[in-house]
Image (cartoon, rainbow over the protein chains, first blue to last red):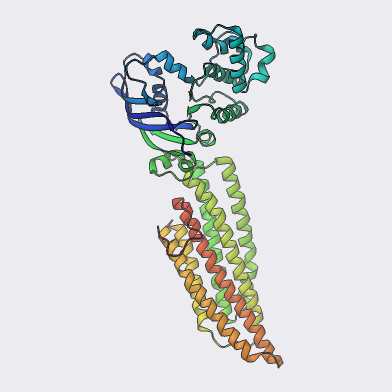
Length: 253
Length: 229
């Protein structure tokens, strides 16, 4: 059965000052699917990703035109609580960025700032999140040591656990494995597959093989426009447009 | 700067074309040897097959290397998979040329059977189909792939006619004398040659189908011959 749309962007433009970084992006992301955004540097894929939880609001001089709907609600509409939005739409960044706190406190942080103080509930949610991020077995005996003592791959899974702790619906990942070695990368990719059951995932990656391996849907961006989108198998075996073909076969420019 | 991978792809294509040229020569020599009862020419086909087999192994190894090391996508991926299959078809076509030549070695030792017009037509259509299949690979011409497939009907018809002619001949001449038994043996060898040619046509059709896959990512195998783009 076809999955319903989780996120729908309609005629989205984005400006950094006078510079139009995204132009007329209309795209749909299905619930519980992994979508990959690919394209050369500066094509707008990360900018677009950050539009989906309004992270770009923090950039002075930026402006958005068009609409982004999550479950039918326009996230740029009036009366939208941006903090609540970011709880629903979590984010994982390129470089692992754990807080200089214990492993436990990193994961508990989001819960505490959201007013969940009950120790038992917090402990339960921390364990659940670490298990979901497939990190629990590696850290369960040292939950109260510093997160900075973890390896890069473990730190990134900790950041994923931290994002999961507030029970988001969507996870945005901006090159989540680009700073990791192949084994840590593989763990993150396996984890992404696992998380699909419970979350809608959108991942930006420069690594096309990674997009091919992990995603169900691939969207190709070029110079601020969405060139082509389709199921990943088709996009990587017989894309419809020459521009897509040229990019994924390395014949660009 | 041209990407190293594109040179590798070009090399792969050149290896296939080299193999196709040798296979064409084998097929032409085998059919000429049959028509002209030229044992020596037939022997060159048998001897030359080693080279084609070696090229097939080279293509196998090359495609495996490119898949493993370059992780190709889209058309590049289809090109590599397609050429691996085409090299396999070429090797089998060359084997048919060897088979024809081996039958010719036998037939050339004895007086010729009466000429069979369908056999000559079958030879013509096999060579044409083969050449067209190779040129559709060279020019990435999917339309030509459909044309090759359409020609296969004619090949089947000629093969049937050869069979009917020779079965009739054998029925009239069987068994009794030693001379008549020889007629049967010659007829059977000739029927085998017609089957070889018919296989060449099938394999040429396959090459066309692989080209459709390479160029457009479409699968036209096992469709009715009237199916078009």
